Length: 328
Image 1 (cartoon, rainbow, N blue to C red):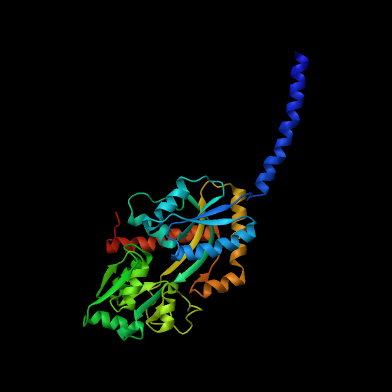
Image 2: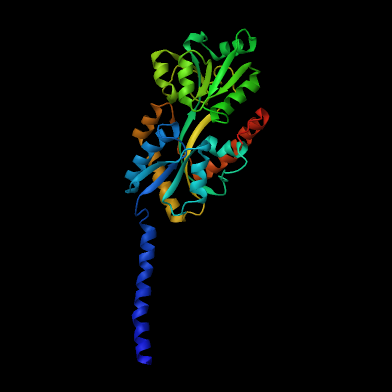
């Protein structure tokens, strides 16, 4: 009996020892299967249209398929909660966010919003998108100063359209309206598309949104961009001034997108994902692609993204409270 026990032990030991290098190898070869990027908005929306070309290029760098999954609803909260609290923290499920999800939603919703600094961890920044101040050409104003003068005068009722209450465009507008004392009524829509259509038809006087949402109408001459709300002019609109150049330095509102992972994702997977994300963001072809859509390619480190969320949460939280914007 003792001899048999010793033989069993002698056979078992090499198996255990051989198993150790296998475990290390799996960590070293991440990813070994497809990676999923969850988007909290419908296909064809602004986040989705950035996520898909990014995922395609990330797939090439990682050597594994990177697929985009849309889980639309509640300003991106459904997708964010799914990734933060209902998905394995293994590096194979990621979340693409826009800034409003991380810096606006915590002040707009009482529940169903993850803590973006505790429950999730940043992978890479992707884009920055200064907003475009857009009017119909038929309104007859050519500068931001002319629009402000018209709005202050009260000579005609003006309205502003957004893709919905609490969206980044809405909150950016409230910042501008408050600082300049503008008499403009806010009309929320269910999405940017219907709002743009009503502006083209002349029923809406002002929008503040990403340029790629209205690019075709601007190029056709139906709509006009008076200014962009970032520190620099857009490559796609080199003749359009910034709001600072137009005389309104307080009106700065930059939308951005980033990729995050569940907080407990293994360090080896985070390291590989961050390196791969940085490689994609350094590709000149991708930089040029984003510029053509009115976006600025902008890699940000994990620490920079965390600090940005902290800083901008203070700014937009104050605006949301002052405007008394609530979604539940």
